[in-house]
Image 1 (cartoon, one colour):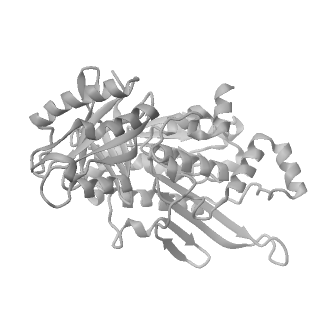
Image 2: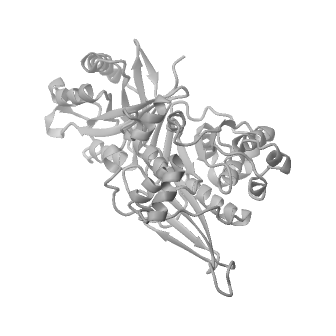
Image 3: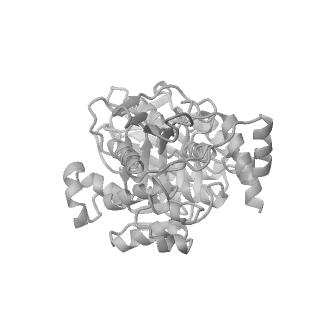
Length: 470
């Protein structure tokens, strides 16, 4: 049985498609998506890379139920797919709102998709999709001589969309009844089907996993390469001093707690560093990523994964600031935190000014060659890093709650101003204030790689290629 096939688009790609396919004249229109891929063991993820329009005037026929064009119109698209090894998805509209493939669609796809497969060559999957007037999409791919439904089509925009081929078929568990009243059963069903990667299993990672389980997430990938110590017990939910004494992996402590709940969430603990290529490949199959790490290079890597695989990325960071000297030395003067939502193809943590590529390089050197990093710090070439930061579970849980609620606000929009105004949310307990900023700009570093999927080297990072050889 082949792994389920998902199609992942960015919000900008989806918006472009809707504008093209529904120009307001009531007639069908057509476009093509070129996709990268994540050939995973749990799911095949097709990642939308480029959208190619078929101009209205170049179509031979456009009516409310037919769109016809010359095959010559897509020669350049297929050449591009063949040169880059990209999958091809045809997308057309159903202005009448018909929510299934028509007999005419079947005849067209049986002619078109085998032709695309023969042209592009290679062991690639190609398919067809339909967009309805409200923007909802469904699709199928040709595998062998059979059409297989696309299991999920997702959109990572200001709002998050996940459309499933068999929507409405899942059983809503009784324990979700109370929050189903707030979000509706459709949202609860989507939560049951979602796979979340939570990177970091300590201060904010632990309460984030706890919340996702209680919300009814279907699957959680928990990544952290560290083990328990006594200083961790004050902030890792369900951990004990025995766990610290036994130096148990943090991810195993969280996984055991998840399984004890009996709530049905499948948890996959991974005791490896995020910079392990195998970990990147696992995370890249997920539907959403929660970054609960302090490291600059870890945040950069998650930003890259989100871009290459069209995954929404939620980052949370906590900061406690103490006076370094003087009469008030050691006293806390600021307790704050930040939640960033990263849309693939838009701004990044780098373009928002949270850190620079020089900071990323320094963090990488500290991780791979601590002695060389220390020498360069002493010689003044790079800034020194911080040691263990203060950690208070009540502050961590506040930050974790904000990041999970940020996700929920985009899965089931309820804000008055719309989600585009909340790309970054900052809280300060010192001043008891909440600030937020809108989405602005595009990350010039990462935007060219939207939807690139699996490339060599992985994420075009030499370090991952080197690690793959070890």
